[in-house]
Amino acid sequence: MLKTRIIPCLDVADGRVVKGINFTQLVDAGDPVEAARAYDAAGADELCFLDIHATHENRGTMFDLVTRTAETIFMPLTVGGGVRSHKDVRALLLAGADKVSFNSAAVADPDVITEAALRFGSQCIVCAIDAKTVAPGRWEIFTHGGRRETGIDAVEFARTVAAKGAGEILLTSMDRDGTRAGFNLPLTRAISDAVDIPVIASGGVGTLDHLVEGVTLGGASAVLAASIFHFGTFTVAEAKAHMAANGIPVRPI
Amino acid sequence: MSLTALVDYDSGNLHSAQKAFERMAFETGAGSVVVTSDPDVVSRADRVVLPGDGAFPHCREQLFGISGLAEAIIEAVEVKGRPFLGICVGMQMLASRGHEYELTEGLDWIGGEITRITPGDPALKVPHMGWNDLVLDQPHPVLDGIETGDHAYFVHSWAMQVTDPAHLLAHVDYGGAVTAIVGRDTIVGTQFHPEKSQATGLRLIGNFLTWRP
Image (cartoon, rainbow over all chains, first blue to last red; front, side):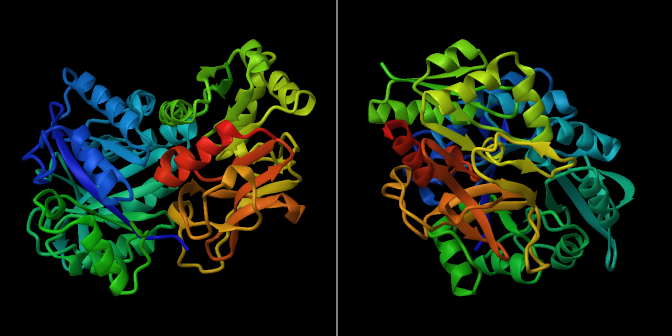
């Protein structure tokens, strides 16, 4: 039976983990490679690196980071942030990423998904969707960290990128991100029901029950969280134990 | 000194596979690992690994598009009996035929067809992506130390339907049985990514690198 994945996400800026990781065993809490190694040992199912202010100048730092991570851990790694074309995808895959995530570029032109999927296969193309509630039961896409509205319906957009060849959707609720109030479950459910590809729920996790709800009520195939793991509020093992106790199949550590 | 050729035919990401094989070659004293698209290197190699990501017809076209490369692999396996490991689409390439996009001939080393995954439960998503627990169907030296219930990382929308059950080494359940590992003579193939499957995957790689069929 396929297991529900738990994916810690590291926000990276200029090759360093933003805010650091509160694991006592880490010598350098700001080094993403050390953090990746710790999450590998902790039983995470995948990892996600998000380059939060990717610029042309600092791309090399991210490539180097991905390469060193891929040499160290043998688990799936998704990299996103500033990915604009299939050339960026290729460079990140060559550096050692397993999946690459489009965001704003796919909103500007969903065909970038097709161009990349045809070259490298849908299995490695993720589309990140940042959505905000605009009315009850209606969500729209926002880009640039939630500051820029696009007027595009999130559910419709999810269908579009799935049809364009995305292999997975990383769905973030901008209303909930950073609030610790739990996933936006109606949004998660609406997107998950709209597409055949796996949906990763993200944004708002504050408790272990939130992880459970993302799967049981939201219909997500995987749950992504950052601060609850980084700050040591909960371990991946605790998250898995809680999900298992609620009837969600997880990979034992 | 033993040499393992990791075949590069411009089909996906070889970096993590290379690092995983290098690490296990070091740990098991299995010689060196080289990433190559050179038929001469494949001919000299003691073991051949064929990875592969993406669509079946594209992979086959790439493989046969490099002059002499497919011939060198076929000779290494069929004439010299060298141990061979196919990974993901590299494993699917072992089948007789693939049906993805168009009907494409495979290497036909393991009788079977590559067909789209159609889970019995409509709630199950395709691609089959993530960790699934292996059910071992028969013992094999490459599976030494790996047990039913161990997890491996899968990401695929198409899977092999094996004609002869004797070639099925392991499967997983995803709304029905999905082929996970196949084998015959000196040939093995894994649908999952051993290089992404942490301890279980590294164990399989180490076993392959020290396998003397």
